[in-house]
Every structure is written in structure tokens, then in C-alpha cells.
Image (cartoon, rainbow, N blue to C red):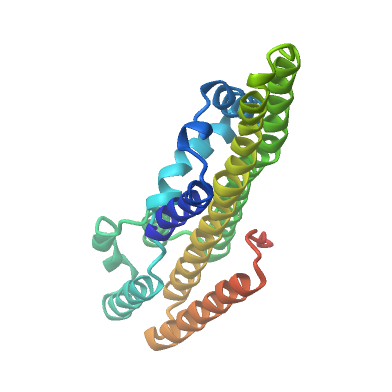
Amino acid sequence: MIVSCIGIFLGMFAVIGGAVLEGLHLSALTQPTAAIIVFGGTLGATMLACTGEEFSSAIKMIPKIFFGKSPDFSGLIKEIVDLANLARKDGLLALEKSVANIKNPFFAQNLRKIVDGYDPAILREMMEEKIFKTEEHANAVGKVFETGGGFSPTIGIIGAVLGLIHVMGNLSDSSKLGSGIAVAFVATVYGVGLANLILIPMGNKAKKLGKHEAEEMEIICTGLLAIQAGLNPRIIEDRLNNMEMEHGKGHKAGAESGEGGAEKKAA
């Protein structure tokens, strides 16, 4: 998602650029000690607050947050309708040849189960459980980033206090008081910036990606069960198009209200 890359660059550029326009030198914001305190302290506190699986999943989610693609609902619906036409013409067993050509693992696995003759009720239950767990997992990953965003400003304050302690221990040299205090507060800038420009937005994005993936899986679930039931492909297409419209309205409403969290679906 190019918008994520643009967003983080724009946020950093606005903050640093504004400071430079006010006459602040970039060297004043480059403090290795403050960086070690804030970034290291935030990382350690976050690792302590999360399980190893949650933390590992959050690290793996980072490339997807910045470079993942939005789901192509229209293309997915067309693929499902094509399969419905094939099943209506040649029967469900004819779908077996199509399994290998489907890239979406959830789609391919459950299409295989239809070909293998799974009971519709059992198949529905299995797919809905997977959908719920997928969104629940994304929420847990998003919480990892949000947890880090909660710790970061406080760690920044700790860094600032430690810097001030150092300054107060050298009051005899008044010429260095101003620069020493400035250096101390850089840790606060790091902490607040890390939380509000990076970690919390990444947490929101992780939750949204999970919601979008769950919506994609819901369309697949509805389409596959309709194919298994032998519904007319036109009816299937209309039903899935209505689902796509509902998901689109949900995204728009979420954007307008500023809600970043994903709601859990009842199984």
C-alpha cells in the first residue's frame, strides 16, 4: 500500500521540516543515547507485554502493512461466478482441475473440500471459524503495535528525566545548561513521535488489513456454499455484489468516523 509509505514519510517530513524552518539544526535531534533509551526501552516493554507468538506475528506483518495490496473483490467475485458456471455445466467434480490455479489458500483449500464432498453445514462451520480466527489474530497483532505506542511516550519521559539528572549534576558549568536540557528533551520527542507517527498508526492498519482479509474470506465462504448448493450463477453474482457494496459502505463509514478497529464477527 503506497499510501502507507507516503503517510509515514509525510508525517516525519512535516515534523522535522517544521523544526528546521524554525531554525533548529538536525544535529540537535540526533542523539544516540536518547534513541537507545526510547527504542530499546519501548521494544523491551512491548516484548514483556506480549507473547512470543504475538510479537513474531507483528514483525511478520510489517511488510504487509507497507506493501500489501487491498483485496480485489470484483476479481474474486468474477472467479467465483466462473466456477459456478463450470459446476452448473459439468458438475462439482469438474472444479477439481481449477483448485491448482487458485492463489488464495483459503479459497483453494475449501474448494477442494467441496470437490471431496464435505457436508455443507460442517464446511460452513469450518470456514466461519477460520474467518473469526483470522480477524482475531489481526486484532492481536494490531494490539502489539498499539501497546508499544502506549509505552513509548513514557519511556521518552524517562529518558528526559535521566538527561536532566545528568544536567543537574553539572550545574557548575552554566554554559552547558541550555544544550544539556535540549538534549534531554530529545528523548521525549523520540517517544511521542515513535508512538503517534509510527506505532499507533501501524496498529490501526494491521487491524484494518485483518478486517479486509476477513471480508474477502466471507465472500469466498458465501460463494462456495452457494456453488455447493447448486444456485444459479446469476443469483450468486448478485449476492456477492451486494456483499461487496456492504463492505464498501463499511469502509467509508469507518473512514468518516475515524474508527480504526476491526469488529469481531460472530461465528
